[in-house]
Length: 80
Length: 229
Image (tube, rainbow over all chains, first blue to last red; front, side, top):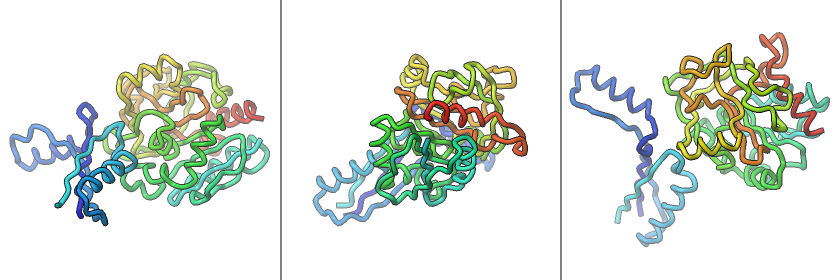
C-alpha cells in the first residue's frame, strides 16, 4: 500500500520561503497570487495492506519524525 | 571534570569544542560516535555544530532520533548537563529537550558573522562566568537559526528565566537590526526548566583566543568548568 504525506506549516508560522516564491511569481508576471505556503510531500511504500493499520502507522511516523509538531501539520492519503 | 562531545555524520565543529573545553578543563573531552548506544559517565555532554545528516528533512531531525540520543535524553532526565551549540541546539529542540523550533533564517540567507549577545541571566551552571545584562561578541554561522515558539511557550520561558541569550546591538538594545535571523523576541539561546540544558545558535567555542578576534566565549567554558568541577 502507498501512503502520501503532505507536511505544511501551521497557520501563524511565518514562511519566508513561501513569500519569496510568491514574490518571484509576481515578478514573472503571474498576477493574483495572494499567498504561497511551502511544504513537503513524501511518498511511502508500505508492506501493510490494511488501511486502518496503515493509517495508524503513518500517523505515528508523522508525529515521531516526518513532521515537527511545533511548527507543522500533516495530512495522510492512502492508495487503496 | 570530564566531558563528552557527540559526533554525528556531518558534524564539523567538534574539534573547536574540544579545544575550548580542553583549554578550561585541563584534559581532553571524550569524542562519542552517534551510533554508540551509551555515553560514558561524564559531568557534561556537548552536542557541537555542523550539518548532521546533511540537514535532511529538517536540521537536527535525524540526529535527534539516533541511538546515542536515547541515552543522552535519559542522562539529561537524571540531571546530567547538556550543552547544544548551533546544530546541537537544533537537535535539542527536535528531541523536545528544549521547547520551540529553529526555522530557516528570515532573509533566507546563510549568515556567518560576529553578533552581540545580551546575557539574560548568570544564574546557571553555564553562564556563571558572565554578569546578567553583559553584552558579549561571538560569531554565528547558520542557515536555520530562526527561533520560533508559540506565545504561551515564550511567556513561560520569560517568566521562568529560561531565556539565556538574546541578539542585541553594541549597547544591549534589542532590535530587528541586531537580529541576524529573525528569531522571535531576539532569542539566541534558551534553557530547559531545570536549567541543566542550554541550547544556543552562536558559537562561543570560536571566540576563545585573541587570534579569533576576541575571547568573549571563554567565560562560558571557564564558568561551566568552575560550576562542574
